[in-house]
Length: 148
Ligand code: FES
Image (cartoon, rainbow, N blue to C red; front, side, top):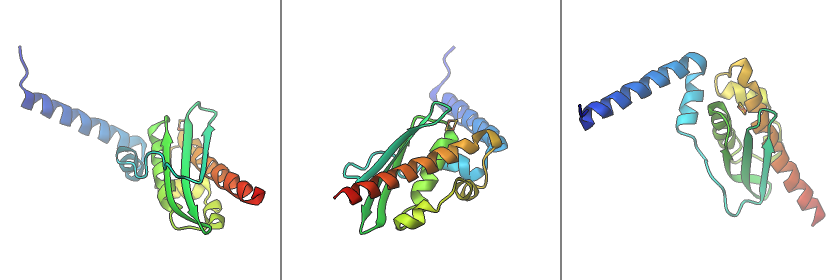
């Protein structure tokens, strides 16, 4: 029997809605929205600060920054990790925009988690991984400035 395309599309839509609702039982709406529609995904080709960290869970977070006169003018991320890691990279790269290096360094995993309306205990480390990657990028940038 052939299922026509409309029926198939409807089936896919219903399935996606079911998955979405299931995820909302585990994660906040902000987390789910961020990982379905991440902002700032990808590499910044002319980034002057970047870092990669592989967390204990085996997932990798990458952060790219463009820093001009001490201000973060562009930020992006890439990860091979879980949905919450995508949400953390997305939210964190929006939080650092137009911040000074000192201000960006003050962002804690708790502040990132709060900005996402919370993360389940087993995903708290995803925020830590994102924040640690940001800090590494900023430290590497500052150390390279000192060398000049
Ligand atoms: Fe590894 Fe989220 S489970 S960073």
